[in-house]
Amino acid sequence: MTALDAGPRTEDAGAPPPVRPRRSRTAWLGSDRFLAVATPVLVLVLWEALAQVGIIDTRFFPAPSAIVVRGVEMLASGELVEHTWVSVRRLLIAILIGGVPALLLGLAMGLSRKLRAALDPIIAATYPVPKSAIFPLFLLVFGLGEASKIAVVAVGVFYPIAVNTVAGVREIAPIYHDVGTNFGARRWQVFRTIAFPGALPLILTGFNLAFGMALMLLVVAEMLGAKSGLGFLIWNSWQTFQVENMYVGLVVISLLGFLFALLVKGLEGVLVPWRKR
Image 1 (cartoon, rainbow, N blue to C red):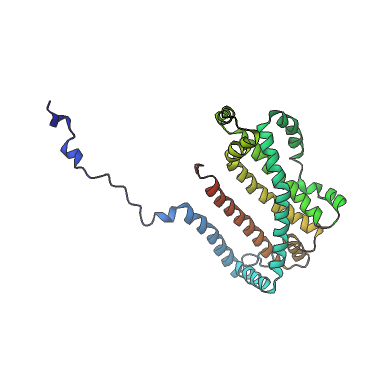
Image 2 (cartoon, helix red, strand yellow; image 1 turned 60 degrees about the vertical axis):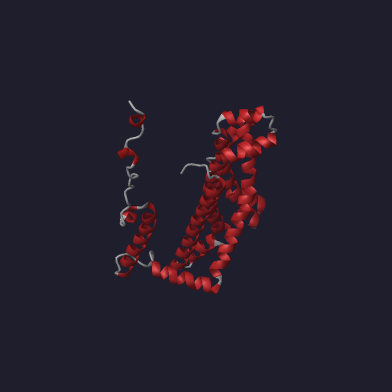
């Protein structure tokens, strides 16, 4: 065998690179992004058509166009902005009060077996209790002011964040803790460089779940004991049979939840770039 025989074959060396199949121009019709937009649009169009021809009772299910018109009117008058801002302010305060302690406690419980053994039974026993059921207790303790509403929402925020943070820390591979110990990492360094980054995906999931819980509890609290906010707007609209106003409040609550979910996804892309999607 000569040196030429051992070398690459001419047909292999000169072969063109493999051609990747071109994506069909209509492939976007079946994409997830298209379906995510098309499905709600189709539902709204169908709803509008059924309302216009009188198949559904517009006294209870007004047409989407009527809801949009009413929403624009409420925006122009400032009524919708005022109620939305009051609810958002309460949400932010409650998430801060309930979320930060939950995050710190979850990290500590995830790292400490003894602390986890001491607090796990308490969390397991109190987590299933509906937080709206203890709202009357907060009314007795804090009165009808802002404190009772913020307190019940903060308690609802606490549990999803704490539970997900503990789970996130415990899912970290033990080898990372061993490496930190071998390099003499102190407890704060373990918190900052191992526990928090490793648990961050589940922490963000916890915040996402907590925001949904916070919205539900806030609406209930504002219905029962408030003179402003989206919950009050919905309840007052029901009492006065202003159905379009009620639907406007529901749409704003849905948009708040959707925007927060987008924010969490954006933060996940920035803070957790290594996570496989």
